[in-house]
Amino acid sequence: MKQPGFLASYVASKYSFNEHPAGGTPASIASITTADVSKFYADNYDAGRSVLIFAGQISPGAASAAGTKYFGKLPRREIPNGRVEFKPEQVGPVSPNGILVIDLPKSGQAAVAFTEKLGKVGRQGNDFYTASVLNSVVGGGYSARLNYEIRIKRGLSYGASSRFAWRSGNSNFFASAQTKNESAAEVAEVLLGEIRRLSTSDVAASEMVPRRSVLTGGFGRNLETTGGLAGAIADLYAFGIPTTELNEYVKKINATSPANVKDFAAANLTGSTIIIAGDYSVFKDDLAKRFPKTKVQVITAADLDLSKESLQK
Image (cartoon, rainbow, N blue to C red; front, side, top):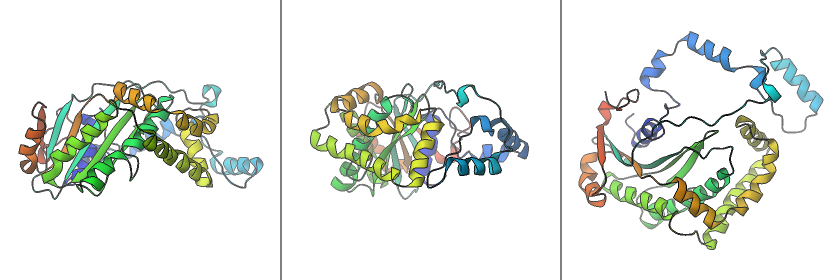
C-alpha cells in the first residue's frame, strides 16, 4: 500500500470499475473464515460447470480414464446443454470524469493511470477484436503509442502500457505509466492526449499493419505449444464462447479497419478519469496548470479505505 503503481491499480478497482480488488483488502482478508472457504467450494466447484481440457499426444480414451480417476467423485449438478449460461453483468455507477490523486508523501515516484469502464463491450461480442487491435495500437507493446511517446520520445518512464480486463458482458480499460513525481502531470496529459487521439484520427496503414501482425503472430505462436492451445480453449469455455471461435481470431483481427478503431474509441473511450498516486506536493502546481478546468480530488494514502464508498476512513 506504499507503492504508487499498486495503489493506482487497487484504487481503480473501486473508484473506476465499481468492483472489489481481487486480492482483497486487509479488512476483507481478515474477515474470511474456514466456513466461508468451504461454502464457496461447495457452491461453485462441481462437474456440471467444469471442463477438463487435454492438449497433446493423448487419446480420447486415455483422457476420459484420467478424468474419471481424478475427478470422478466431483459432485455434479446438471446445467442445461452442459454449458454455463452467461448474462450481461449489471454495471453500477462508476467514477465521474476528473482526476483522483492518492497523496503518498515522500514517495520515490508517481504512478499515472487512465481508467474507463466499458459497460457494453464484453468478451463474448465481436467488439473484442476491435478492442484488441486498439489496445495493440495504443499500449500493447514496446512500439505502441504510449510507450513511444512517454518512454522513447520523452524519457519519462521505463515503460507505458494499456490493457483490457474482460468480463462476459463488459470490460475495464487501464492504461498506465510510472514516472518521477515532477513529471506526473505531463505523463497524465500525454496519456489522455493519446487516448483521445484514437477517436479523432485514423490509424495509418503503416502503423495498423504491424500492430495487427503483433496480435496474429503472438496468437499463432501461442497455439504452437500444448499449454498455449489448452489455455486458448479454456478462455473460450470460461466465457461460454464456442470453441469454433478459435478459428476466427486471425480473420477478424485482420478485418479490423482504422475506421473500426476510430469509431470504437469515439463510442467507448469517452471519459477522462485519471488516477495519480504519488507525492502531490511535488506535482500539484503543474497539474493545475495543465488541467485548469478539471476537478481534482485528493485523498491521503494514510486515509484510504477501499471498503468505503468515499474511499476514506
